[in-house]
Amino acid sequence: MIALKEAECCALAGTNYRSTTGAPAGESPAAYARFVRPQASRGGNLTEPRDSSDELSRRAQDLAPLVIEWAGSYAGEIARDLTTEASAAKIPPQPSPAILLEALLFTLHVVDRLVFRFLGRDHRNPFMDSLLGAVHSRLQAVGIPPVVLEEAYAEKQFQYSQFKTLFAAEGEPLNGTLCWEFGKLIVTRYGDANPIGATVIATGAMHTIGTMHTVLNDPARGILRTGPAA
Image (cartoon, rainbow, N blue to C red):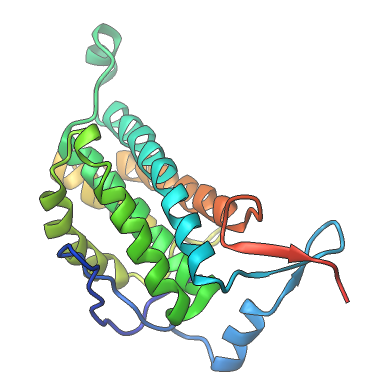
């Protein structure tokens, strides 16, 4: 599980974004070192984090359209989950700008935590700066004023970083995990506070984590690279 233990502010040049940084809570330095150590892929090659700032910046910029597209898809699912069957049968619901913003902020937070886990603080900060800058430049096209994301980003980073566990292990309670708290927030603010609805949205949040994890682990487009095993 992934957590942020301490909060710091890192400004994105030219905007008002702030990134929350810290170390994985509950892990020793040795455990963290084992996590980022090169791993063997199924083809026998080693997978390790990229360390070129220029290449990581390009990867971050290339990731921005996918992040926005995924957030839009997840926002659509949330809108359907919040709509009754009777009304949904008449007109397929469209996500409001507010729900799209919530989905985008959640996706960015997930990417931030995963990137920190893979790259550490030194490479993670410029990666997220590049990603946020690329997302910022595309917001008008999806109906979100950039200033709105700027104002909400730091608040959500702080709020979500309080939940140390991303999702519950099988058989463990959902309460207190990032996914559950996101689902609960959505149904409380935009729905009828139904715990079933919160569970459904939390499941979508888990899919978001899984998808971003897969993308970031993909040597062709993510932040890892492969080389021949020793």
